[in-house]
Image 1 (cartoon, helix red, strand yellow):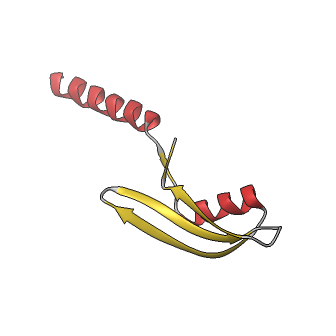
Image 2 (image 1 turned 60 degrees about the horizontal axis):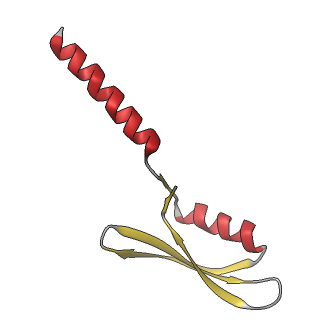
Length: 77
């Protein structure tokens, strides 16, 4: 019985921690986000890693003809 209570408490703690943690974006999510925000055309996209941090580097052609490089962190709040 005591073991069962421990398992239930552990599961609840994990569930609570998971709900409060950041959402992880995929490269496709990041591309879609940049397209929505800039209304531009994505020219290229790549994943950069530095230690345990992941950033998506997305090159986009904006509506006014400029090329911008936008970095989107994989961890989103």
